[in-house]
Image: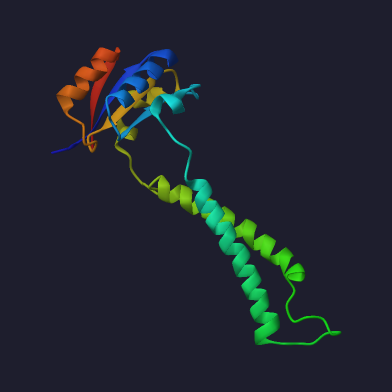
Length: 176
């Protein structure tokens, strides 16, 4: 027997979906999302979304790349295989900067990619919303609020009543 994944409410206009997002957030729901056919100005603040943490993954990756480049060049030139050339020092941060800079960019981009995948819980090979026929309208002209059943505040009857009071045109239970 299929289990309940979420309850999905449909709205007709960007203004209606914006009001609905504010009401859902004000009622204390945590596991929910809004799906629209185009970006709606002000939706992030209506949903209470904070800045992404992906930048921190990129920053840590970049710092790791820079340190890796410096340590690698120091180890190769000053420790592992010392060659005195014209009385120059065995290690100079000036000559080690270009490869370290390149590793900063490389590791930073890997950090951003892996951080985004981790935070979005990807790869997810199947999502219950994708088999819902009505949800396909989210790419055309409909706006949806989806409240997951894993939310601590979720109660099918109470959540349905809230979505009806907000003015949803169609409310549907989405199964796994």
